[in-house]
Amino acid sequence: MIKTSLAGLAACVAGLSGSAALGAVNVSQGASAPTYATTLTFDEVGGPTGANVPSNAWTGVGITSMVSGSGANAVTNVSAQPGFGWLGTGNVFYGPFGVFINFGSDLTEFSAQFWDSSGPASGFGGGAAVIAFNDGVEVGFLFVTNPAFGGAGNTWIDITTDSGSVFDEVRLLGFGFFPESYVDNLSWNAVPAPASALVAGLGLFAAARRRRA
Image 1 (cartoon, rainbow, N blue to C red):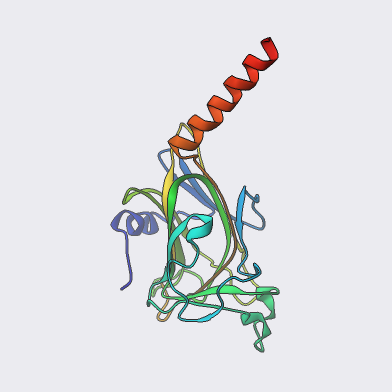
Image 2 (cartoon, rainbow, N blue to C red):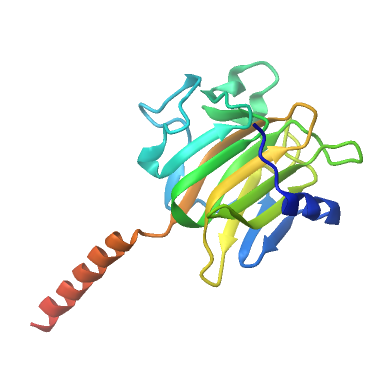
């Protein structure tokens, strides 16, 4: 099932590209992006590869679900196929009809490389979208007028926040006839769980007491 966003489609009509924000969540496309605290390259030793990878295969790094729009997940070295060398080296996540990522914690930043076969936006379709959600509510949106593919276009997507805003879901999807999406080199900063923050705070408090003693 392909997920869509009415607010996102409205932004498409408005012709947003390059960077956009809803509230304090900013989404941009560029030639590079920062690398954040937690990373996923799909080349990790022992990581899942091949066809039909379970959507919950990455719970160990904080992703509760990553699934393609068609429901058929694959992690494979597509760059080894003729004509796909522009994907770089190593494995990528392949998502027909988009890639949908849910996190177990709130995030403040996220970056990834994103390619989509939909082609440049036109009156007949094309283009792609990057959408951030928090608790099911859309909080950030970017319409990508020229998705990276075939060695052309900027590959990096970066999502940042300010004013205490967070998000916990990222959707990347194209608007072509049969969009094929690829993602790689994910990274993000997660907000510590309340219990973790409390433990860290108690540790700092104890250290301060020892110094005073």
